[in-house]
Figure 1 (cartoon, rainbow, N blue to C red):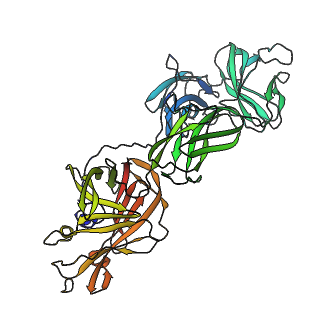
Figure 2: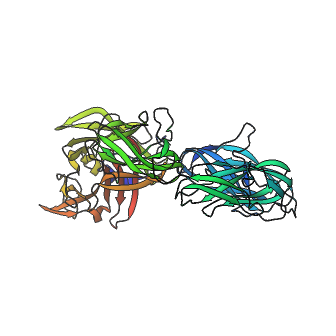
Figure 3: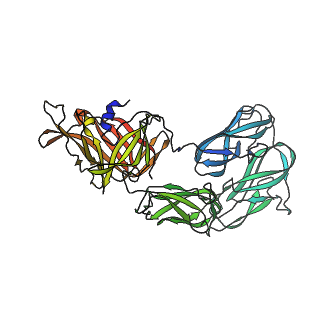
Length: 566
């Protein structure tokens, strides 16, 4: 399928590529995973319906809403929706950035055309739950009701205040609310609110039954002063009030680490950056994102250490609930490769996460290390390569690689390293069309070379063909492109649709030269209409290859989609 490219790709670490279907070892997904929470009857929690629903009256998306609770297992985008019943439905989209329980508001659309109880099925991921909405008859007016006494003449609302209230911290309806008890004499619409000018608790809806019942007023606003705040109801209940106590800003926060799924791994840590053996961490690229659940706002210091590395952050939480904290990395990665356990300080000393330490190597050759690539973002057009424990001696000792192009494992090349230089040994004669094999060694990467400074392979001569009627020698010419040494590179593949950023990447340009007269070498790109670029990431190896024609137009690309360096 890529016969024209196979001729040239043999020189850049890949002997033969073809089509194969390969199972992935990774499955990053931009779509969230989770489930709706419900009770034993299958009714959605927390069973919240907001706004008034009257037959023949168009719904207002901002006020006619329902609230459902979701247990998020994997962050990502989401769509939560209902079926259409009685001429209207509910829907919302967004992105979950934290795992765990969270409340989500679905907005309405449409106009209910008849009175009655409408049962909706809410769908998210593979889960469903049920929620009922009562539509009142057309022409329904305001309800008649009273606030049930809290025990004193002025405190005529039996208010139950929920949530934490802190100076200069905005209220969140899901966490800051007040439950009051009302006695309904006549069904109909209602709008209840109480405020002190800084905070407001309110709810609009419809009473569909008479008698004593509870209404949850959602909080909004920001208290700018501490102490006791008197919340006074709007008319006709202006003589009624309740108290909300606001804590002064400052003081230590109270929070927990959100679980990563196991008792000891009680931090849902996302490790960012490349960690290379015996290399100092850089906070801007080496950091860990964790999720915490804050019950009381205030100052915090979070620290985790392990293997000579420290991840820490000091700051202040200004809101309660789940949120992300970025711990900056410092120190030096350990000299040993593989997983390093990092442990949190008190009071979370039982919680850990792991950091994978890469070898300080741009082309790892450890036995059973393996890589999977795909061509041009086509999932089924792939190549699997694996380093073996076997070697071959040809002046120097080379590690034998194997590859699978869909027909089974076959020779995948011979490689070695000396200091900061990396070498391949291969049959140049067969590749170029000699009558006999001609095995040569060339330097495919000089990781210590200065940018834009070329290095050459030994010349190979005796080719049976001619150029301009004369025999000629060929050699490879390599250089690290200017500005492309130890830089981050990002690209996506079919199994990494949102992209992966690789750190410490060296981009090497690979061209051919021919000797037209003794000692006179010329670039051969225009004649063969080809040159290439190889991308090497420290601790990982070859992550990308691009083939260009002489007009600098990309002809094909091969990109890493998963790897395992042991």
